[in-house]
Length: 288
Image (cartoon, rainbow, N blue to C red; front, side, top):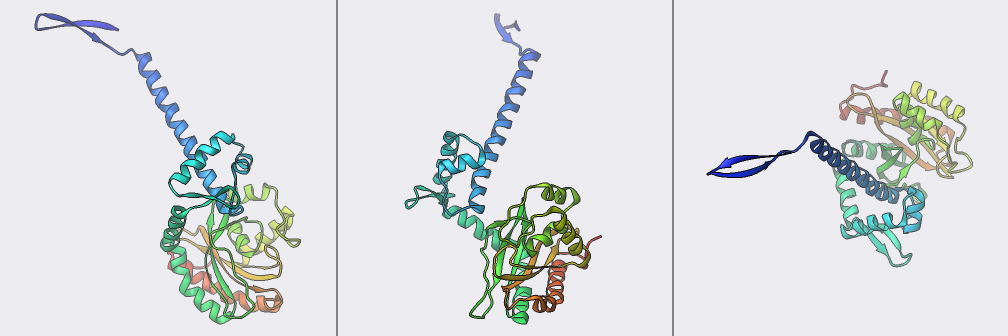
């Protein structure tokens, strides 16, 4: 719409935006914001693949896993390399995590409240049991080892820090799964389970029974369910509001951490987890 106004004796045209023009501008802005959010999500999804899979991934593999075009994936990978979040791998011609990702991970570990609270307790737990003591944190669709106090024995178990593990396999994972909100736990139980070993529980009903035991007793034991030849005892760790934020465990060779040893370690691991939970602000005991 155009009108005119007199300025110093001269008629000057003035343009007014119509309501429809304003609506279209808002729609364009909303579409741009939505597109930006989707793009950011794709970048995050690509980066998170490197937390789970092999050390090196190529364009084709990333595109297949995320169901994206190779052109889109290539642009994302190039951007991440430019920021040193990824680096090219000359041996595989793929990509691996870069120095900026390592710096972010190191800072996240240093500032992790659960890790800071757990480490003194884990040192004592390792001394009492003679086995490796670990702390894990809950994360989207899984959990991740934050740190460990390795056994001083010549034959021992160690864990991979920073790798995401599923919640259906192993005592540390099951302790987190057992205390998730109902809807989150239901979503995990309705998914298809992958057997990590021939002892991994992949039957949903059998897993539900185990989770009920964990909720009632506050601990889990396992024998070669996530890693062959490993025995473990784990207990959940709770935040200030009683939500599960992670778990701790004692693990070692299954021939040494056998059923009698696991029974003996249960009160030690439960007590250690309770101390860490209290340090994080929880009043102690099991929620609900």
